[in-house]
Image (cartoon, rainbow, N blue to C red; front, side, top):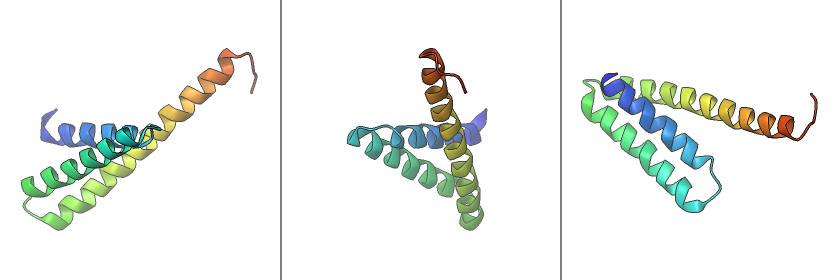
Length: 84
């Protein structure tokens, strides 16, 4: 998995925490995203490329979190007997 996997996990957890309702979770998610970006820049030889790839990874994490949230809503509606 390596260090790239760690950054992706940090980003995904950060985005997931931001999508939750409590304010403490949102701030924790923001801190995780900032830590992910700082670690990526410190590890990289070229900071500009690190930021670009971090933004691309963040976009991936946002899409996955949105899909999970949508799936959870759909499963809740399906469990109540509603048909699509």
